[in-house]
Image 1 (cartoon, rainbow, N blue to C red):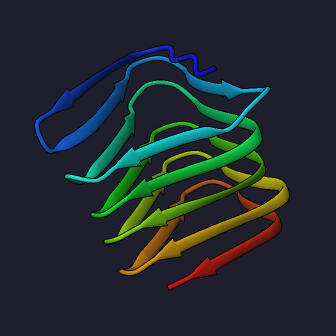
Image 2 (cartoon, rainbow, N blue to C red; image 1 turned 180 degrees about the horizontal axis):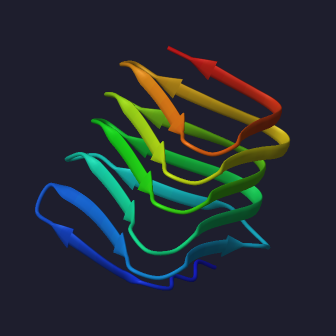
Length: 131
């Protein structure tokens, strides 16, 4: 189950998510998979908070770059999952960045991984970052 508050649009070889308010994804019973094979992935949260909560497995895969931007807080809570990017990963947060996991979370990036936050940055749990 995936719920989205905001707007989402796909443009040819890219998937772009632009949210002007609070944005949240919740997957409580099963696995969550996002796959982008043809283009870059850009997520922009311009006016609200971003919250992702997954209690099953979480897999996010892209063959090109992954860019996430939030002007407020960015919270990701995973039970178990994997994020892969074939290109570069850039996460920019103007507010606070929190990433937590109660299972295993693997970030596999073939390019450069950049995570920046102007507020507090909390990354905890069993996380593996591979470049």
